[in-house]
Image (tube, rainbow, N blue to C red; front, side):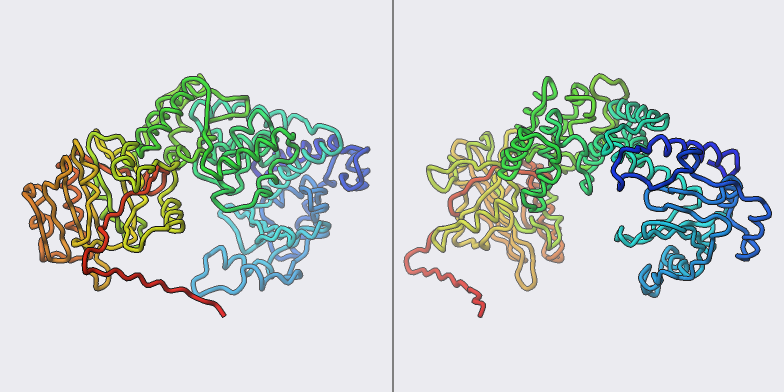
Length: 638
């Protein structure tokens, strides 16, 4: 909207007529705008226009020429009633006055400026004393027109502040931007007011907005999610009922979780199975209690509430499984099988290929965002992949497929040496076994004959539970390893941050037992820290016998057997290199990956969930004449 009489008048007339049509005489007193007989009778929220003489007199009194949009507004209406829901009267020419920090808020917003304040902070700091006050009657809301915050068109910014909002003043670029926002606020509030009065708020504006929501849904299904999101955001600002639930689906797939509640869908039995797991996963992640999920179930039936309880239980226990119909549902099952063994890139490729076959469960369903609540598949939906999903035409819509998002898993093993000291994987040990499925590893190196795979969990959870539940001899060095596939024909068992340190004299390679009828590779790495030398151990076993091994500790190298030239530690770990940079370790891991064609899945280990099991000890018991002492320190509070 430009700032002329011809532009202001139709906008203000439409606003006034929609306001008058929305008033319900049978509504409770607190749901009505008050005794506004004149605007109801005349269907006009404004006043007679101000003459040029009155406007000039105001400008002379103020010592300023008014900004264009407020000046042109006054030529249509000399003041305004019901600007939004909380400003009941805006000033005309007789009521405009300097604010002069009458509210005493200058010391609070923006508060004390530091030595390098932002331009926005500097403007706000002086606004309270120099601004014009436009609010005359309001619900403790200040509307201030700032002559010190002026754009290239001569427009003054408007600042709107209400203490009960518990937020800094909201800035609008001009008076007409403020009025458009108040018109949207009127619409947004009127939706619920009309519902409480037993009516429906409908007019040409709401019908046009609802049509835009329908069009946005088709845009979203066709992969034009940015266009859809913008249209839905506009509809949300007017309070259109379906828009928030639709846009939240887009936001969640883009990795946004703040204030994403799928408004209107949570309590609907049709959509609840898709929505509830996503909300439950957030509640579990943030350790919230059960009542916080119930907060979003207003109006839900007992059946939906029972479903919510069961979903929350499953998500808490890591047992929830996302399902879908048809070809996409079958792809979900295939992807889950790939993800639980660490092949998350392949799992995403499986889902991506089937996305065009996905079908919504109802007209307010844009995408399979319920995947985000699945403990195995949810971590796959990174913001980059969420964008790819949203940009893929679905549900029978046609369009070009987007360029694939980059796979987050690097090839090989060298990434293990790239972590800084705060990295969870800064130290590690792992076993690689050829021609053996991951599910067979407990039978080869399990702590006892009853060792089985646990349900998939994060490495952090597995480590925490294992350490807190251990009841073994003090010399034992069992590991709770995560298992999965390590490339074509190989499986892995991996433990981050082993509890004990590598001791070459007491080390018992799990590769001996694991390599029956095949080959196995064992690696143990401890980085250089402080005064402690770094350690890197590699051993290769075949059919229960060690073929070769080497251990590098600082600048010392020990070896056994004929180490292949590609893995020669003298070449990989030159003595003149700095210890802390892990360059030799990186070269050794690169060479190992090339020698055997193996890899480890970084994404699954750092962000996903994998099966785990308890291994035999990686250290032998004390021998004759050897002693083993464990010191335990406990802190007692007085």
